Image (cartoon, rainbow, N blue to C red; front, side, top):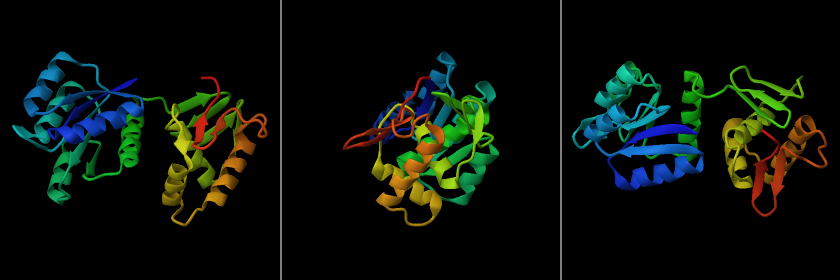
Length: 226
């Protein structure tokens, strides 16, 4: 389980972010101030990524980022309520991997976290489940050692399952994310077609799927042995 240091002084935001990240199989340690963040970093060296609010009651997130980069060498993503270019540039120049402006969409944040972890080498770039291997760095998908060809939307659909391997994914969420990726309207019938096509390519028996499993009345979940 990947561990995240969350430096955020707003209790409600910190609470909601913690619940979100825990639901995505991350462990979270919260620090509401710059001082507390330094104390946590001194005692606990086993973090994989830090989410740092730029505005803190006793300082700013830039100082925290500098400490993290000097001692931990882990990815940092800034959380900021300001879209000002100066703040963004300053954060990136200090070595932060990314920034996200509040308010943000939860799925966008978790996607950026996973991208930063992959880029830093702190998460495997090859996901394997039930004979399926997805190399997210190279964009290569194999089934039982044989490379298979997917369309852009089929690959995007598969990545949603790969990035959310332990929970049920609703049809509404799939529609939302595929629509974003396609840049065009994707309706419920189209989603059914893409699920069918993807199953035909990655399942041993598409009529009895073991990888993309239907959860009636809810959506789908990823199956298969790890």
